[in-house]
Image (cartoon, rainbow, N blue to C red):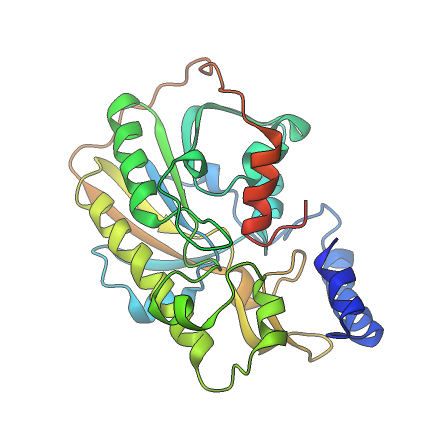
Length: 301
């Protein structure tokens, strides 16, 4: 059952609210007929040897909390949700100079359908060090481990490393104590009183966890490394044109909180000598396990 149908059944939302959210999304889609944010960057056209993606990381929170060594700028993302970001950046591209290490299964879900191909893809979410009760999510240190392994195995490839955090579920102390890990962030906003700053604390704790791991990679990876995000997060802001309070990251809504992302540049040692080569054989994946992990992150598949 989709989250929308469940919320209607349980009386947590109304047809009027859903219609208003749909109209906001329609406002942006009519201005972007290509199906993504036309003002956003093509991440593969940017100059980097290693790109670390912090899922659902807002620029303003990153700028306030990060102590990472490097030059911080901002970029505009092509998307306000991960699958939209994958479509906007990977469609019909043979990226044979890229190794993609990801804890978010959205690329694996749609790669064949959109004609996307990378040299190698590492399904980090299949690792056995997942955390959570009633839900599982890849902790950032597991992603870092796989990133180190990939950097050693593929020294002449661009390395794309995709963390889950600060994306919900929250795995810091506030998140573990107060929030249901099986709900989406939008559902959480309907279940809890978020006026006490609890949501802000939980999001910041998730961000701190992943920043610590990004720091480990910056200290080790050779070449030009960029720390960025696929999209941001709504934490109760009102979106436009209809001023609804919103949570999470609905696709197709291109407000600053969702599309303005960090772009921190750090260079260590020599630049990589990048070589494109034919893709490696891709492991088979259990479709049921893939769908379950997507649901764990709040995606309706």
